[in-house]
Every structure is written in C-alpha cells, then in structure tokens.
Length: 258
Image (cartoon, rainbow, N blue to C red):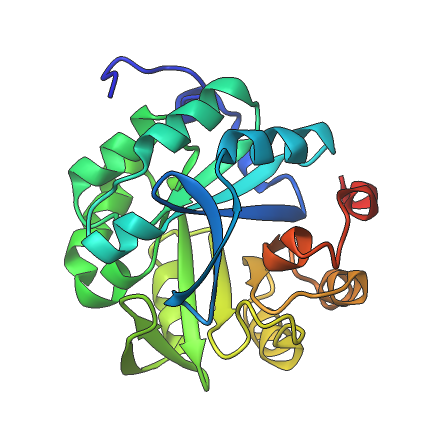
C-alpha cells in the first residue's frame, strides 16, 4: 500500500458530501471479487463480477454518489484485507466511499482513510470494545464513522451476525449519538440478502425516536416500492445490494434519487 495515497482522501471530501446520496449501492468483496451472501452465510456466496472497479464505475455512470464497500475477507479475519480494491475504486471514481469489514484497530482505520475512504464503517468494535471505539471517535472525528447496528428481534448481533447480545438497538443508537456519531445504518439480519422487503416498522420506530439522526436502511430491499417506502418514512439513505445484482431494480430506475 502506498502510504502517501491522497487520491480521494477523506480530507478532500466536503463534510456535507458525506451525507449526500440517498441511494447507496453495496459492493461486498471476497478474494478481490464482487459477491453477495445470503443471511451473512459465507457458504451461500454468489460471485457477480470479478472486477469490483467495473461495478463501481457503472454506479458512478448512473449518477450515484455514494458506495458501501464491504471487505468480507477482512470481517472474517479480523483485519482489513481488501484495501487494494478500495484504493483502486477511490482512485478511479469520485464516489463518497464508506468501507468496512475487519476494522479492529486504529491502524486499520488509518489504512482505510489512507486508501481513500471518506467513512470507516464499524459495528462489532462498538459493542465489544466500546472504550477503543470512543478513542477513535476522539482521534479521527465522530463524523468520519458510519456505525452499523445489526439486529435480530431488536437486539444487537455482532461478529458477522454469529453472536447474539442483550443490547437493545435503541440503547445502542442513543449511546453513540451522544458520542457524536451522525450516521447509523441498521440491518435486520433476518432480511438481508433474501429480497423479502425491509424492516419498515423497525425503521419507522427508530426514526421516530431519533428524528435528527442520519438513518440509513439496509437489508431486504427488493423493489422500487421498497425504496419509495423507505424514503417516505424518513430514511436518509438506503443501502441496496442484491436487488441491483439480480436486476430486480435497475440503475436507470435509481437515477431519480440522484
């Protein structure tokens, strides 16, 4: 990795740009390839494209401004692995990229920003090592993190959805809003990758309780009707993956949300 990488560095991205873009397409990476899992199961993997940069360029050409990039190898290993993919996409597009998967140390955070991400996406660390995550918020700035709240029956789950907790999602969100976190996305793990529709009632409840939060929906989106409904209830963004790759939703249809 080039330690002096500056292309698309987060410091060059206007703060308000990190909040722009309702549609946030997702690229999940395993072995440098664009894949999707079903329900977070690595055994249910489908490769959609061996060149993630090509996919990102298609998103940019459609006028989409943000990208949700997930390092599934990193998530499994517990350290960032696919930073070269991030560096390539950041260097060749102007998309505002959030990158997650395997960010477990301050060094990982540094790598992610050096390689061009505007936001570091984290989840499990905020549950398992709250003290460390709060240090990151102070060191890098709370506005530089996208916090993931993965839930099962309104309780937080961690470690690639393999570990349940007793933490109520509302308590989790409130705690980190108080620490300055501005953007949170929530994935109902029972919905992810199944194209069965998003957890509308859960999201409505979260938005009602935290009206000033930049809340992003994730998981289950399968039609433009789902996208319209999420916009209607007040979501500030929606992460879409499998529905695009399975051509349930076309990039042309998404252009009206640019």
